[in-house]
Image (tube, rainbow over all chains, first blue to last red; front, side):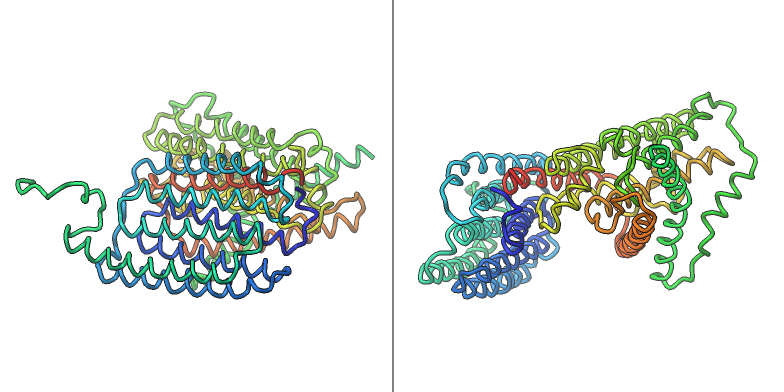
Length: 226
Length: 317
């Protein structure tokens, strides 16, 4: 795989894919809720940009999915999350991250792991941009890591959504995207999920007066707590 | 021919020595304009150095030989480090004999003696500054080496001249690894040269100072050498960043027009970098010291991502 042989457009796709991975790491390290939502929106925007570049290099039908991604993941879902956060008065919420440096190094280990897993796939003669598959697998795993390490329900949802970004990146980079019907279905799925999560947030915060999911493990708050 | 080439090294050293105060003056002046002040004259850093060289040099009676020797060692090691980085031309004999690991070694030597000198007199501030400097450099050095290795893996050489040659020969290629290495190196440079999110070069506020705390006991020509070395270090990192990542315009032949255009290009790039630095320093607030490890962790992560994306995306390139 030689970067020199690729066109400038494909090189730009590589750069954007690497930026998406970096934004996943930023999400992992972000302790402010609102900033996390902004980073997620940026990730969606960069993903839309990468899709548009792939579309410009030949697969013109991808322009539709690029527009859809920009609309849904960079604008609509972040706006919905932001509104939820405002409604639940969590705008100034800062989550303390236990072992932040350790989690980041774990994330780097996940990148290496996903490279190791994907190496056999890269021998297939897919598109020139197939190396991106390992990056997108890493984005998926990093999304999982975000969901595991966070206790805030909203950040867990952001982790889930960024996982979906990784899957989308893999589809675009490896095979020029899924059929439009599937893509529309997935986009609709994500939108419905975002709405459902919003309802969940409301219920969780009503019943336990917080969005800390660790407290869902307890049956009831002990009365004699100081 | 070789004698001429070594004369070029001498010329580059002189350019570094004269240019470093000018770069500092430029950054201060842009910063002053951004803050609606008029700012000091261009010649102010030179005048300061001239004044300090003329003043009496006082040494505390508890000071040992390390305290007296440190300014010379710090200054000399920084100047030697400057000769390794190609400024106006790639064909530099000093860049051919020393690679980038030697550069990191020179900087580490200077820093080691700076920290020793800070602790030598035995004042509380000196020791505090040294401990903070060591904290930051211990975190910054791995990030810098990782960023450098990213470059070295692409060019298959740790020699700065070969890295620049490789970059020039391959033309415009968008490399994700270079982007990450650049961002990591910028963060390291900010931390190492004591600019705003980590340290404030203009304050003597006891709670926050790092570099100023270590040189607090110095006066006269010792202080002048220390300040000059700090200015050299700023220019060194600036030249390293602009010439390695944006090498276009640097002279590749030893002819007068090539050297002149190399000089013009590097001045332009450094002026632009100075503007960016001044804007960033005006917009950002200084971080608490305990946030500095997180800042440098980010630098390390960026450099590591650069290395990984080099392996994953550009292997064989």
